Amino acid sequence: MGSKADRTAGGKPEGETRWPLGFARADGLHGSRFLAFPLRSAAALHTTSVVAKVAIRVHGPLDLMAEYQTTPSDTFTLLEISGRIEPDNWHELNAIFTELTESDTVTNILVDLAGLEYTASAGFRELFMAGKKLARKGGRLAVCSLNGEVKRVFEMAGFATAYPTFETRADAEPYFAV
Image (cartoon, rainbow, N blue to C red; front, side, top):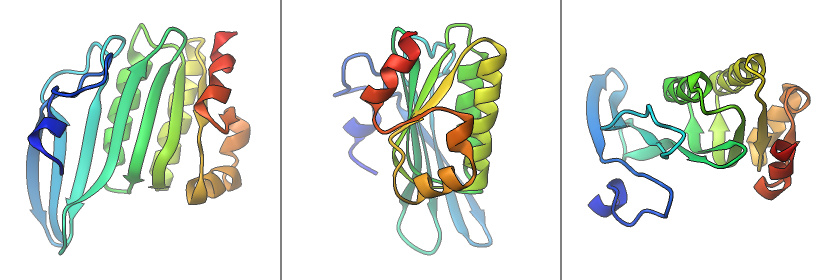
């Protein structure tokens, strides 16, 4: 999980906020589920970054499941997703997209999937729904840095035709400058 300094605001890059994380544990039939969540509200997404983590332990070590980080810029909000979006943790992605798409200051979102190893269909659904919400308010959504299995499934499902995709973040930035 990292040192305490990794989980607090200490040592953060400029323009990024990492809030202290709270942890909750729920025991179930197949092991224990651990949730990590920021201890402060994410209401001011236009000026801060949010890091939300979800981890699960099923008869083994604690593994990072997904990490979401938002960083605002002049023309778009960057959402970096890494790890794995599983059928039991897509709610965190839903919550982040809801915060972003309902914000008055967020119009465009660039989703960077360079660190995403796997996503269940619910992850694709959340991406699609966020794009539709942004379009209704005159905004745009684009995706960059697809790789591996995520890229293959993304293309097979037709999402590459629904939203612009770019090889790199630098390739995507001019799309929002128009």
